[in-house]
Image (cartoon, rainbow, N blue to C red; front, side, top):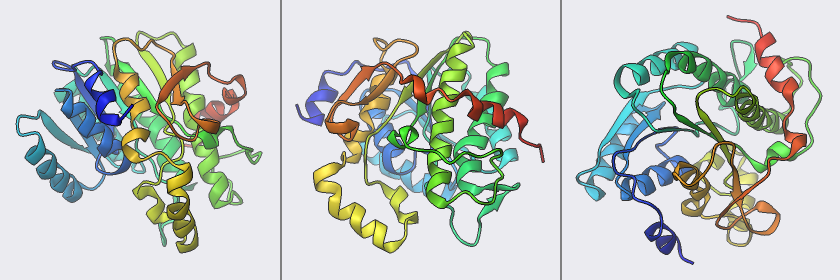
Length: 289
């Protein structure tokens, strides 16, 4: 089946508003395009508003009648996160689903730490947790929250006592942050709140996020893309399936291919080993600014 055929059989999303964090590039942008093609109203929460304006113009050229808007959102900045949550309530509290897609792989030099946290952990996990903790108490109606996880969440994690540990390697920062995202999904799912919580993984996909990798890693990632990775248009399909009204609360959606690396999405049981409640407890114990 081609991606075009998959989309042709996907339900129409008219009258549904979908919010996406980190939707100006990579998987988030691909998802935004797919949602617009199915007539959804899309709100993108973006860190770089200049880039957001470029994306807006590009999308409106292709989808001239699109309902598309943007919110300033930097997941590494506490005040930006709080402001964005308040703007969601003020302008878009009628949203159907929120795709929690924003994240980075490696901190950009010279910025390595924010509020004592490695930037990767601060952005991918601590900022995400703050966003949810700010937003959820302000919502009365039922909404759907879709967490963007990663297959690296199942890999070996360094044992740490604090997210502010200065001896966490670059790769472990990323592994820990994505494992934390998946632990957050399970934590909220177990709270039995008046919302729906789903987890998706894109498999291996060479997106713009690799621009933060060292040159050698970028080269190897691009060279192996043909054999091992999902094209970004396919990597965004698990999140698209999570938006579907036929997909149930608690669903865990991943690629169906070899080692969950690539392929069209499937729903499976969330692995018990990834629940890792201690990662959520560490967020709660983290010192405030």
